[in-house]
Amino acid sequence: MTSLSRHTVAITGGARGIGRSTAQAFLAAGARVAIGDIDADLVAATAEELGCAGFALDVADVDSFTAFLDDAEEALGPLTVLVNNAGIMPTGSFLDEPLHVAERQLGINVTGVVIGSKLAGNRFATRGAGHLVNIASVAGVIASPGLATYCASKHAVAGLGEALRQELPARGVAVTTILPGFVRTELIAGLSPGRIVERIGVVEPEQIADAILDAVATGHVGARFVPRAGAATARLMNVLPVRMRDGLSRRLGGHDVMLRTDETARAAYRARTEREPSVR
Image (cartoon, rainbow, N blue to C red):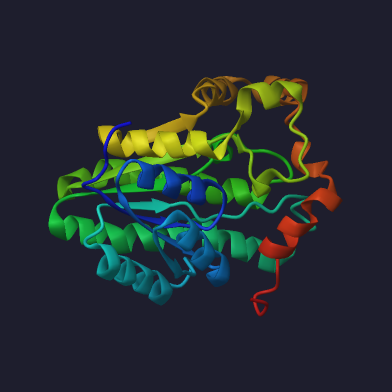
């Protein structure tokens, strides 16, 4: 494994799923790691278990994000990497989606990434070096029924990453955008992607972590699909006529997967991610 001992890494949404796996991978590679998560109790427990720093974090709040970066640097030293990983994926009919659920997705998935990229990006630019890694989704380039607001949020992250990839190198800041397929975490609880999508599009969180570490170790910038087949699928889907695209999506079993969820299996995830704003 390549040593990343010179890096100090902050990871949002680090208490579970992709964030936790990424923290583990960076620690194993010798990096110093701080994780942040809105679940203060869980992030404290995860940090203790992994042997890293952990802090409560609301990515959609600029003061909270600033405090997280300040605390991470006070504990570990100047940051060299920020992984903007925090995100939620409510599913279901767009017209039936409560407005507060749409607003929460945009706040976490988009505003949180913008805030993190600005705050960490300015610190990196001041020092002349640093790496932003933003987690988008294949849904950021291939839209899916039953996932409209989430697709909009990840299109935004993909677009932001492509613009920053071109803008920030002059300031010493590298920008990578990771576009995962279906990641086998609580995010896809109650979903049935279908046999073909399962084979070509479902990945483990450790695979996302590996892609992030490789990008940091090699200085890779721009978009990276995980699995790599996602890039070919995206290119194909985006050049096909609409009728052929929709037909292929149906044949692959992905056209209505977000509208056919097992609500019993998805209940815990919904309760955690779709709560009213006043509920903490």
